[in-house]
Image 1 (cartoon, rainbow, N blue to C red):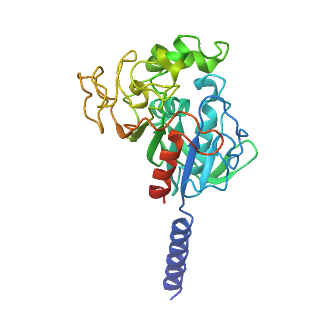
Image 2 (tube, helix red, strand yellow; image 1 turned 90 degrees about the horizontal axis):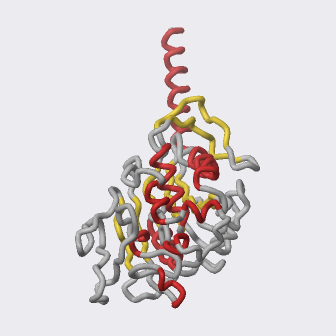
Length: 295
């Protein structure tokens, strides 16, 4: 009888633990900023870069702030802290990036996406770090997808030409040849990057090849492979090869990186690069998609 009672107690404790683990499972939406920063680093409630924090932007939204000035490598620990906090154990993440945030996420997954990560408790301190949950580890992070608003994973010719302050370490990283050689863009730990390409350029963006959103061209925002940028456009432009939707090769034969798919191409040239502190530009398109799918 005593053995039977002990067995019942053990089963009860086991079931309680399982239920507790199930109950603690959460989905989070992480927003990773680009050049310029703005939000308080380490404060996942600081949405200054994007717009009002009250705006709907996916389930359990968090602002993953880095300074947007220093190099991708030197700032990358901030992103890994956030991924460890919210995307390990029973928790899963949706991720939205803007501009250089795409370069940052690509670098993170290529270099650390298959590394051993301690499972965390999703309770961050003032530095943006979380404590271990149960003392166990896992491989990589639990990420459902990445949606990239005007992704700069392929760099920008504005950096090449010195249109941005060349004293910024990040601007050096954003040179097209540097960004494309920084890591293996085909290595994403099997996480899909869904690309949103804006096309509302302006006069000063004439140095950007093909269609652009004032800061980054389609060759980058469309996740197009190669050692340097190329000219790609909307189907209405007869003088330029088309950026194709999905994962298909572009007109003229240029390929996209593995696990990169164009889900929005700005055929009406309506969206520029900038959020303007109110979730505007190409970010507005991504925010709508995230609200509808990050549940």
